[in-house]
Length: 413
Ligand code: CTP
Image (tube, rainbow, N blue to C red; front, side, top):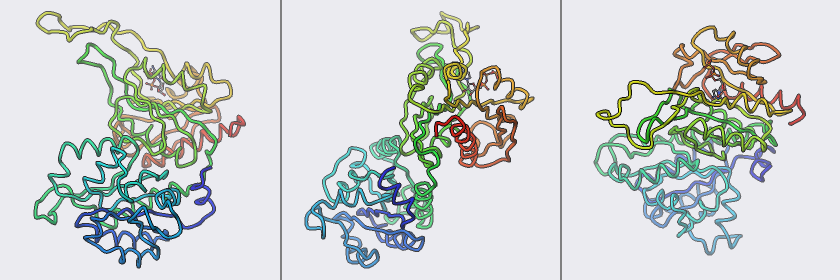
């Protein structure tokens, strides 16, 4: 258990490092600070020199009751404020995040107290961008946002509306209440009981793409949301998570070790090589059942090579292969069905040798591909439990409760 988790588990106040950058919305960081304090958080502040042109450090010192870290040299009590504050924080919150600071975060540049402290943070980072619409839309900013998201940095906002400069568009700092709520949600994850601490999980998620030629592929409607929610919930509950992701555009849950794959065969290879390192595998991926038998190595030209039919060959069943190897490890699969849900799910449980099948009826709008809710039944040797329609994070927790119980039965937790 990390120092941070231990502190959170002991019930001390959650610690937020508020990083204030030089933008007109810097004054709203004062209200964010107050909102966090009202919710019981301890807040420390680091600021850039530009931020101090908008709001004085004295304001944040008075509000937080602690010195503001705006210089790497001369901070009271420690010669290394960046390491001290980076290790102290449960969450770093950047308000407003300017295009410049986001670029530095993406590049790992640490050329002042704020960016050096953020680089030294081992905790999740939540970024609330606030800038001019053209700066937000700039290709460089968008590339930096994508880099940060892929690394597990979370963003709240920006909103659209009339900006301080008079332009109208995206770039407006998210409302204070929304920023505080997003921060508290992340802190809630940090303070959750770590009932999966010590467990190593493999989660696969998303669709696979099966190449017809270098341009075309066969895919399915999976978005990966369910598997990513399972990975995020497992991390919040203390598990170590390997996330094997098919082609999806979802941010990496903080702390997940993510491996991106494209085809069913790629996914199989990565899952098999990781399986020896885990206690449980949760196979939520919609792996293609068939793949083109002879993908072309060049783009097929319709004038010369007709594509009236594609010869397909069956892919290997990753879930069944993991089940055959599992020993006392726990393996859970999913069954996406449109009819006779429970009968098909139980048949899959037995045929593949899984410990648990999470069955969902994808013909229902609340449990179809891309939905933010799911209605599942948990099918195992112990019986069938039909759950209500719930938001994906709650479904993820229900699946993990079942996996946790199985791990305990096997003595792996
Ligand atoms: N699965 C897998 N490898 C495959 C196909 C499926 O690991 N090549 C896994 C999925 O990740 C899921 C489970 O098997 O956990 C069930 O997937 P599903 O598509 O519902 O079932 P199929 O085995 O493909 O059976 P059917 O097409 O008859 O429904």
